[in-house]
Image 1 (cartoon, rainbow, N blue to C red):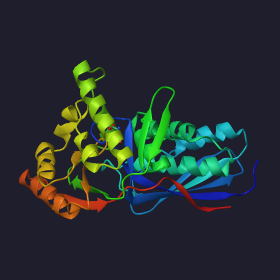
Image 2 (cartoon, rainbow, N blue to C red):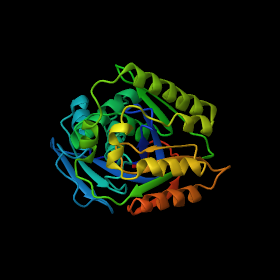
Image 3 (cartoon, rainbow, N blue to C red):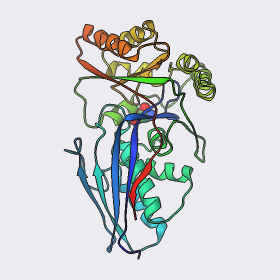
Image 4 (cartoon, helix red, strand yellow):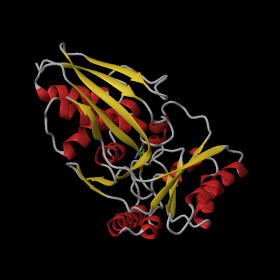
Length: 316
Ligand code: HSE
């Protein structure tokens, strides 16, 4: 049993896939961040409370909230008799494709690792955080949680899982356009069902080449190269029907000189990557909103920048 102790962590939202990197690439974004406080309890409970502007309607059951499974897994690792009280300040809007559940899971995992003094390595933390994604969307994908945990541009790959993160170029702006469309609660799980179980060599070759261009683009700080890889032959062709007007919005963004554009995670937001030293990201956002409206879809946009990883903001 460890004495009364509390740790609070902040973790940013993220965009996943970046086109060709389905389930493997993530980028932390600075617009929104969840804050999660974990506090030791003297009995072996996992209790979740949710506050914040987007907390309403989210599940507090530890089986359903993305903080619950990582918290349980880490308590099991600790072999202590403690439980934990988790308070989530939900600042990331859920359902936009910005890794909202992943950020909560990442913040909780980082906080618990510190609270219980487990000192687990990043790859292990990413795997544990992904248990939260399984609870909220039915699949333990690791791209959003690794971006929120590690920050910057992240590649989560291999079996056993490995992760690598690198800083994104300072001149990269990310335009996020969110169509105002009704979505089912289990949006991510439905979007994942549209992705085929097997793909052809042709699609694999296309995505390997493009994903390599994205990775090299981040390594070189070359936003044009990153953008050139933001095309997907696997998930997007099956998912674009979920985002009315997507093809035209993407085309409009590219015509307005965005370097690349893609569906953000499972959607429905669309991200455009822009070199802010060469183009005005707000102008590109306005062009994309206009294109959505031509398809009778209202939308809003914001411009943001890549962010760092999860960090402790209070702890004893
Ligand atoms: N890579 C995941 C997907 C992200 O596209 O389904 C979901 O947030």
